[in-house]
Length: 116
Length: 116
Image (cartoon, rainbow over all chains, first blue to last red; front, side):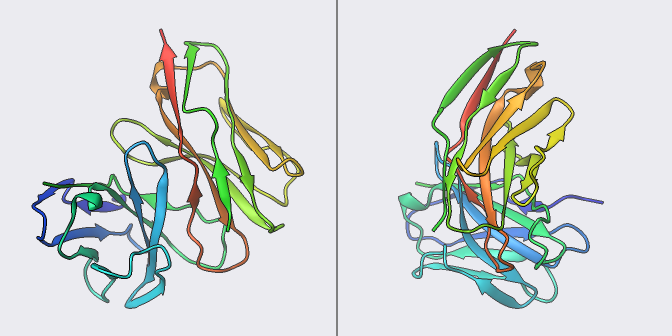
């Protein structure tokens, strides 16, 4: 059973370009969370999605950032017109169900976004 | 809003010795969950141990144990018989047990160094 898969592992973009980060949850998991980690910081919650629905996007900037988790395919975190401050490691986590809040979150290895 | 504080940016311990990592949190909730995650240089987030707030008994996982003091809002991690493979960033995390869509709230982390 493969773990949470994120790609690419490293992504380099120039200011103003678009960044697309992909996350395939563990098999059987229908809930996906995205987190951002700045250098020397802990992970900060961005958005929580279930299949085809955004449940909580309170941690995601209103401008330039969007996320989706389509019925088929991976979850995508999209950052438009990237700026240097977007440089960070972006982590995806998945869980098999929501409501029983002691479920574990299974994390991917992250995508390191570098904006030149 | 909940906050998680890790006051030790870095800790160092001799191999085979015991080390304790501190974590305090602030919440007005009575139902919640606490976690310790390990992040080695590979960047993978690995769940080390978790504690349900309603349980008085401290959680234990092999060489890892916690000292959960609910009244003091303290959740420290004790690593016994430290091994070189324990070297990593350690993050304390909080999750609401309210049944909502809350993600994890992380502390800033403690960098654990194991001296051979």
